[in-house]
Length: 233
Image (cartoon, rainbow, N blue to C red; front, side):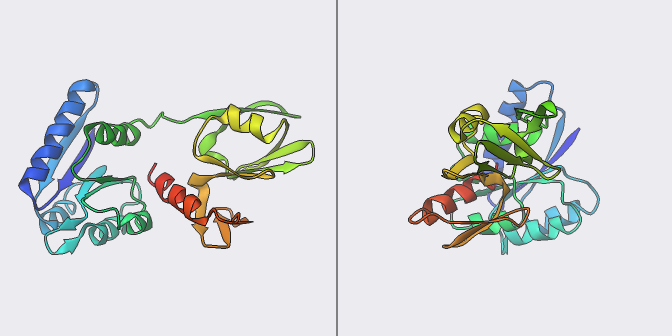
């Protein structure tokens, strides 16, 4: 059973979200969830002292407080809950990233985008794998575990938190085999997992494991936009 908190200081927005959640539940009768609407940040913060919520759907602007600030408070004692922000502006992407939001949807909320966000939040089995064949045999590697792939002469090194896998094949063959847009061919020697980026500036990219790669000339803006996009997936 999942507990969902919806918080917005506009009743119409709450009603719209509740309607969408109800439509989603009709499509997924197996889903077990209770929904709790709140029209103020005070009411939400008071409620969470008595009840554990698995999902928060928050407006970026709630009464006199920022939804991002509220999310920061929620994160102090709950790192696992999924947070979905709803807003009329895209300017808070970076703030939402800071509090590890799951999704960031602009108002008026698109039905399909909202459903896709709930799909990803609820579907804990929505993990994809890449079959790696190396000297140890055939191994199923989760795409989310791959930091990056390095070209080393005839071999390619697939780097994960636990180990690296040396495989044969071209970078393009690996890209085609992975088949996931979150993997970006930085140059002919490096493929990065955009979801595993930690930081980017005009000159370099830092990955979650501390590895640095130079930003190709003229690509900082496009990679930054992809970085923000995949931070919420």
